[in-house]
Length: 326
Ligand SMILES: Cc1cc2nc3c(=O)[nH]c(=O)nc-3n(C[C@H](O)[C@H](O)[C@H](O)COP(=O)(O)O)c2cc1C
Image (cartoon, rainbow, N blue to C red; front, side, top):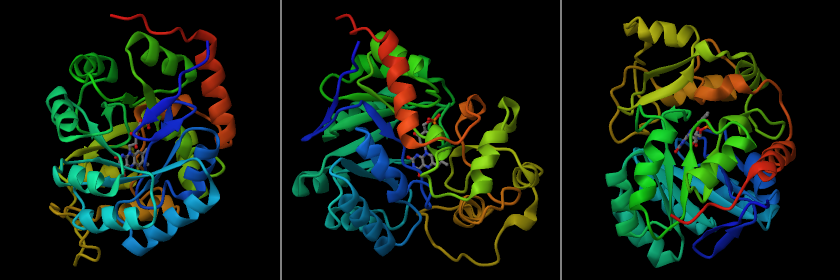
C-alpha cells in the first residue's frame, strides 16, 4: 500500500524520506534539490564550512526547488549559532541538529518560525527534545555513518524511544538499505519516516569526488570500522591507510597549527576538517577520512537520486501495511 506522507511543522513531504545531512560539502544543494524534487526532504550539511558558503548553497537550493530544504548543523561546531542564523536568513525550511544538545536552538526556531528537528540516540534525550519543542525527532543508531551517539542497533533503541515520544514524528536512521527495511521500520516499529545517507553518496548528483564514490562501491562489510573523532565521539568510516595509522596511535597526524578552529572542543589528534576534505573533496581516499554507514557493502552502483527513490518507494509500497494501533 501507499506510504504515508511525513509532516514536520508546516511542511509535508509526500515521501517519508529524509536524505541525511553530510557535512563538509558531501550533501550540498546539488544533492538536496533532486531529493526535494522527488518528494523527500533534501538536507544540506552545514557544519565545517564558512557561513557565507552555507547561505549561498541554501539560496541555490531554494531557487532550485519548491520542495523541502533543511540544513544539518552539529552542536559541536564553534560557530553553531552563526550557522543557524545564516541558514535562517537564507530561508532554510527546517534545521536538524545533532552531536550535542542545545536548548537555545528551540527558542530561536520559535522566534523565526523554523521547525527544529533533533537527532538523538537514547530515550532520555528524546524526552528532552520533545519537551523543549522539537518538531520531529530522528533516532540515529550505531549503523549510521559519521559520528555515533550509541553503539546499539536501530531495532534495539527505536522501540524504547517510540514508547516515550508521543507528540511529534519519529524518524529512524542508520543502516536502512532498501525499501523493504523502510517498510519494516515504519509498519512494524512505528516510525513516521526514515533518514538515509550512505545510499545518497552513491548517486550521480552527489558532488563528492569520483574516488570517494568508488571507495563506497568497493567497500566490503569488513572494511567498515569505528574510529576516534576529535569531536570526542566515535565515528564510523571505511578503513584505509589513514585509519590504520590512527589506530596504530601515530603521533604524526597532529597538525602543526589549527587552521579551521571549527570545533568547540577538539582533542586535536588529527584535523577532521582537513581529512574529510581530502577524501570527499580532493579524492585522496587513502589519507583522507571516509565517513560511511555500516551497510555500505549492500550497494554496488552509482545511480541517480530518482532511481534511489523509485527503488525504495516501490519496494516499500510492495510490502507496507498500515501500522496496527497498539
Ligand atoms: C559521509 C557522511 C557524513 C555524515 N555527516 C553527518 C553530519 O555532518 N551530521 C549528521 O548529523 N550526520 C551525519 N551523517 C549521518 C547521516 O546523516 C545519517 O543519519 C546516517 O548516515 C544514516 O545511516 P545510513 O548512512 O546507513 O543511511 C553522515 C553520514 C555520512 C555517510
